[in-house]
Length: 356
Image 1 (tube, rainbow, N blue to C red):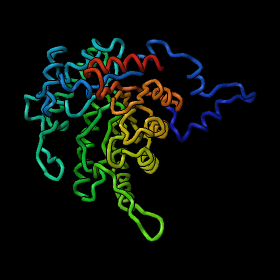
Image 2 (image 1 turned 180 degrees about the vertical axis):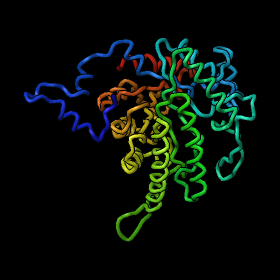
Image 3 (image 1 turned 135 degrees about the vertical axis):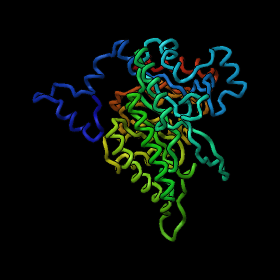
Image 4 (image 1 turned 30 degrees about the horizontal axis):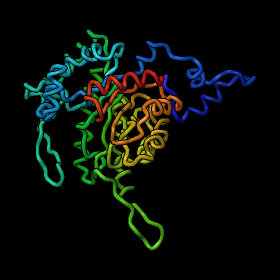
């Protein structure tokens, strides 16, 4: 059972006996070491670091890195991933799935054309549509694969919903509609949560000078629109049984305080944070930023290794989450470094297990 941050101190207080000797739930968990099976239940495989071995419409399979990895590990699709998870990460049954790898690349009927901004230019791409007839059939196939292998979809790392805080109300409306379709699709898979990016500028607006203290009205407007959009998505997610989450990704959410602002303002049990260990704009956020987000996360985090940072202590990050009472899954999202995606994910597998 997850302890909501709003109830944490009340729960802690209630856990004390009249004599002051009983331990609160989080303290009890800390006092009782996890068994190996319980530790493995806290891990999730992650498709992002393994994207180069997938059949894909997104260009992941058309470069030297992909050719090398497919030669070493073979080529798979999302329908193969449940068994790949069991074979590659012994004991792991939870999965974190990237939206860009969904669907049968040979079946055009399950994809929809969408505009995509690249810099200042707009191009079109085709993305999986979970509301299409073929898309629904494919989701059923994946759900059956999971049932057959004893695996579960814990989280969907989703890049499909866009423009969630855009000034254009029609763009926001379209982005929210896409998110709702995916939440319904996530329900088919039994997913517990789904990331939705805030949208907006890739770099958050900066404050402007005034005669008095600097102001950032532009940022506040983006936050306000983001809050209203996430309220609507959280309501829909509540009906589907799937939480919507914000990850420290880019734009508004590069700053962990902005994520806290949105989650607090939305005030819905189906809206929370899904922190990433390494998606930070500077080194001082590595642990301070994670500590700020930890009480806002309950379902899934990205346990990441990324050589962008000299200090990347995975075990320290896991401890930060555990100390905050986090009881969800640690998805093994290796980004870049001395290993390929499979080897890097196996490194994270060992590090997270050692830290739990």
